[in-house]
Length: 423
Image (tube, rainbow, N blue to C red; front, top):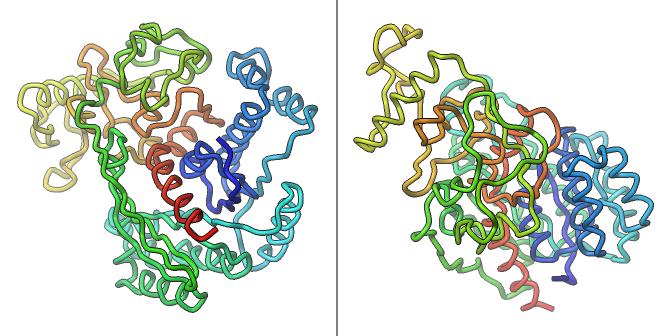
């Protein structure tokens, strides 16, 4: 699928939001991302889409099969002389903003375009997160990331896209007593955009996860448009077990980063995986390696899974046998261990998964471990052929920070309809 519309992607992360627009066929001008590992992941994915579009996908498969290292993979891509990914690494600052704008303008020329139709993205959300403010109220209040949205506005002002999509956590509405939220709306109005913001849940886009995000969509004042009426498609007939039942069972520390075999052939995999193209016939399993856990944690995991299976209740920290309790605090933060709900939608997959797996316990009591990278990626609706670069801790962070691609594609579909209305 090819779209005639161009998109500029800011604060790209590992590319969850980008993936939805890629799948809808939008043409990317540039991606801007500060984190090196996330940028590498995004570059790998952008190359994948370029290779797929040019019928050279075998080069990507050689890479994920391990026949090519990353340097060889990128070199083979360059030899094809296809349009480059247009990635810009680094944090947008007042000192480098002008330089980045010039580079983006060069990328526009490289793709034979003279304008940006859509700007997408959302600044890092830790400073807006209600949970983050609860843990570190002073630090979050003074966090400079509170104001990264100004660079987003600055690029809107310069490139004047027809439409923009700005996503973030719902907590942005109350950050700094609501002043940031109101300021964003005021500044967008000054730039000549009508803007609406609604809280959308990923599960309403067929994602097997309860995950709320606030999605700002704006369009130039002269256009007679309105906020999309997203048709809710909750995955009622499917549940998390639909995502897990073709993956090899693992004990703590087992598995591999590299290629591995599924336990079921494609034709026997779940309808969910096939319908939403999480797994495709030619895929091979990658990045399915379990963390190492100590015996104490695995004992707690089994207790948590057992309680969830029998009572559908979460294990509280003060319910643990005394010999398993190591924290003195037994009156707050009792919800320290959480099993993924295999009977419905998972709770939100967060970047905290990179620190430990206590909040993302695999539901199978025989495995008694936390989620692997591939399992977490599937819950986020990333395709199995989506390779995350960097060490495993960075992979978990990238997945937890991402917009689910299925949700992103649902947004991209409606943005394309809006663009068609004004074309």
